[in-house]
Image (cartoon, rainbow, N blue to C red; front, top):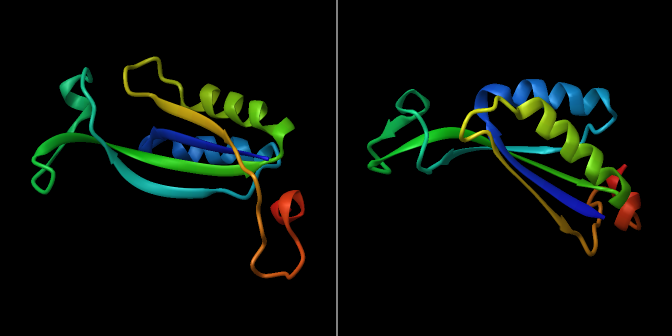
Length: 114
């Protein structure tokens, strides 16, 4: 199993989710976040009094999938989150050793993904 973590522009998350779901990848987690980075045009930033810095709104999208699905998920995210501008985001893929579905006793590993 693999875990795909993508940090993408807040404004593009709806498009990315729609395409992922249409491709059959429906189980994911979304987390709102703020990215602090450099090199973006001024219009890309907001200003936070709490952080006392400029930031951009990002969404972290997490999907745990079968090994053979990871490349397709990354392709979908790259294609649909791409604007060609600095700050389009990042995608990380890492191995998952074990998964357990809490709601049903006995389902684990890939069986817990469906």
